[in-house]
Amino acid sequence: MNGTGEANALSEAAFIARYGALFEHSPWVVERAARARPFDDLHAGLMAVVHAASLDDQLALIRAHPELAGKAAIDRSLTDASAAEQASAGLDRLSAEEFARFHALNAAYAARFDFPFIICVRLTDKAGILAAMEQRLGATRNAEIATAIAQIGEIVRLRLEEGAA
Image 1: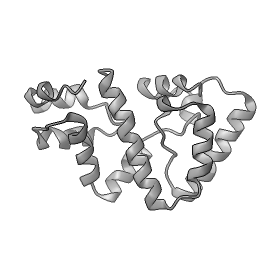
Image 2 (image 1 turned 90 degrees about the vertical axis):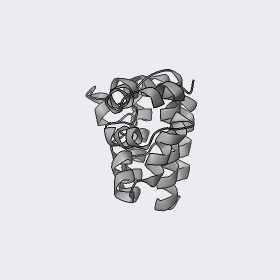
Image 3 (image 1 turned 180 degrees about the horizontal axis):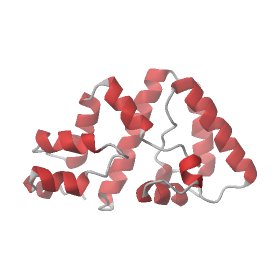
C-alpha cells in the first residue's frame, strides 16, 4: 500500500506527475513533498508538508475542496475522484429533502467557518455526514481547521491505498 520506496526513487518531476492530483486542486503539497524526500512513509510525509504549511496555505487547501452535494456536484464540475467519493456515500442520489438539508448545513457551516465542510465520505454515509455537519457546527474554528486537515489526510490515505493519484 505504502509505495514509499518507489515514491522516493522517482525523479522530482515524476513524483509530481504521479501524485500531483492527490490533494484536491492543490498540487503545491506534492511539489513541496517532492523536495522533502526521502520519506519513511509516503502518506505521513505528504501530511507533514500540510502540517508544516502556513495557516493561509492550509486554508487554501481546505477551500479547494467542493461542498458536499453542492454546486460543483450539480453542474458536474467535480474532479473524477471527488465525484466517485461523493457517489460512494449516495450524495449523487439525494431526495429533495436531503438536498435541502445539505444545502442549509453547507451554508451554515460556510458562514460560521469561511470554508467548506470536509469529511472523508467513503468512511461514512449520508446520515453520518449530516450528523457530523450538525455536530461540528458547534466546534471552534481552530478545531474545525484541524478536523478538516485530518479528514483530508484520510481522503489522501484512501486515494493512495487504491493507487489513485
